[in-house]
Image (cartoon, rainbow, N blue to C red; front, top):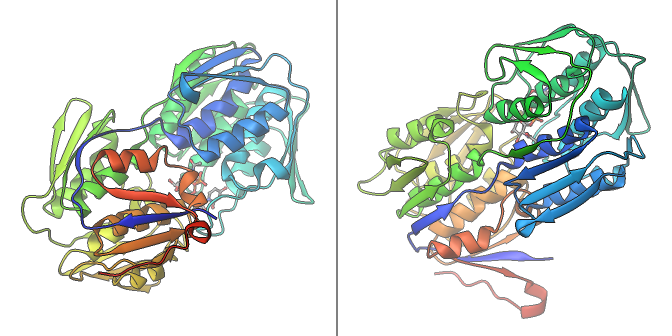
Length: 429
Ligand code: UD1
């Protein structure tokens, strides 16, 4: 089992470029199936979740070719042989559920293993199912598989109880070729919702209002192949911004969309972290002592839940008491016990973490319990005195492209190790 070894205490300095958005790519690649044609998708992040998804897509009969070191994916979707996605491909990634909506929209049938993914709460798919049913589909869940089928799909109005990202995208995809008009009320507004809608429109769909309170989809009879470039990853960008802040460094994060970063920037500024905007870059640097703050996660344009663990790591290093309230997922604080092993003072009460700033972390052996928890531990390790060893880093590989190279490029010390092979001993400071 590989682990990360991080030698902390070096301020990160320089420039880092953001990769394509993992969560957009996880939806755009399945959406290409609706074309029944050839699609060329650029700026695809080379991360484990995408590799697993593309393996599942290939198993359906799609011919997948790569260019540009895997960042450009060419999918020939003209000869789909199978509408069933087995558990073996998908048990690790939650976004398997996008194949439900895209295959249903394209072929009126799909059968997909129930999703896995990060273990951060119950994560039901009732809103997805409600959407499929309202388009006229029958939904059957048996033996760990969800089967969705319809003689024909007919547009309708779907009100989402909560603005679910996954349900919004799934319903958009299923409704593209339905008869008549579909309206999604109370949809999610995340940037990748807009990205997927733009991609679907580039393939001939007729979607209006993505990113607003109502999405309207007029069914079309034909869709076609397209070339498309995925947006930058706002969570990866935010993670490097916090890396700059927590290491008291000076980093310019390039190739992002500043508007997507508004909530993160607002909170960093509230903490007295310096942030400056230059075109599609943000410079984040330390100038004066930070102060603690209160944060609540909310659907976009609120503060993203996927930045919650990284921010708690930062807040832990800042004097005073900070509060982090998680309003999206019910059990997203399991990583706090790992941060405590590094010296953090965090108490969790209900859906709020009470963070009392400490005078620095000390390196320790810790475990990446999920993707963003892993990112938070990397940040804590970069700021800690001494060595940190992070296990279960497959969770980090799921969503961060070339993490070691990017951190090394900023002057951080991180290595991928196999501790059984090298007989590593962790040293403190
Ligand atoms: C997506 C992101 C994830 C991010 C999350 C919230 C992907 C692949 N993952 O996850 O990184 O943390 O958005 O921004 O894009 N819910 C229901 N019923 C449903 C669907 C959701 O009750 O049918 C609840 C969930 O349990 C959760 C909330 O709604 O409490 C939001 O979930 P949702 O927006 O659907 O998240 P995901 O699409 O799973």
